[in-house]
Length: 333
Image 1 (cartoon, helix red, strand yellow):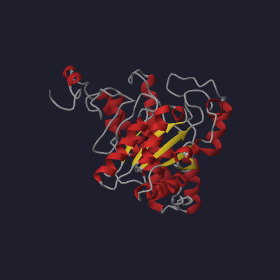
Image 2: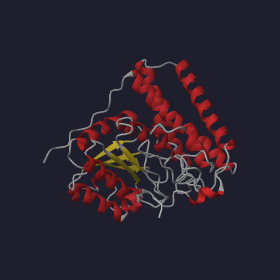
Image 3: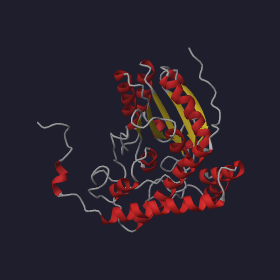
Image 4: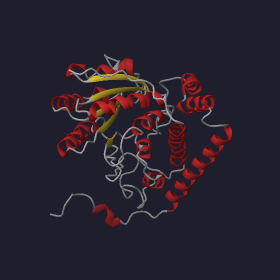
């Protein structure tokens, strides 16, 4: 059996680091605006924000090939779509239920989809996306297209039975799947060490002989370094791999969650010491990759982009009633 190489922290070029920073900032500002629109009643249903976890999708999805590889995740999916380079206007319009949305206004926050960009959905059922991720890996292997699938799920979902059925099948068939546990410490509201007998989640694949890595999910370059190893491993025919991203969400599980299961001091301490965007900015300044003027310009550009997406999402028309009957079945019967 081949041994998994040790992951090294990625050493980015100036252009790479600038792109990492811009993507993380776009996700952060997009989610802040989504929270505002939800509070104004312009977004209905559920809304799960990704604030704090931006380094995970930015680092991982910078290592895959758009249009060749596949991504699937749960219901906290806005950041994953942005990291797939899907137009923020289409995502925001979906949140507000407009016809111009990526799912024509019928999916809302949790159920977005784009075959063209290789994004196979946010899924509202906890861990439902994990066997779908195995299926995407099977499709890549069956077609021989060289693609890999990334299947994201949370620390709470890591205790679901279908996760291990998917692990077993993926290893038996050596499917090119990167299983990613986004361990933000609290699932819906219970800390991982209270809910999981084995709280070192990167070990969860050991009984299936799936190699695992634990990664600092607040450091975008550490994430990208792990992604480099994972993509090479799966693309090279070694089968699946499991990455546990140690990350943290600043907001509640959803917009309706007051997050009383942790203290404000805990959240503030994480913001002050481990924020992925602030850490990237400090390192970029140290490396001479950017100066304060560049950061100010990027902030202005991203805020403008997000404001335009919000305006578009508020003004776009709602779907016609007839849209209810489309996309129910794949074909006509």
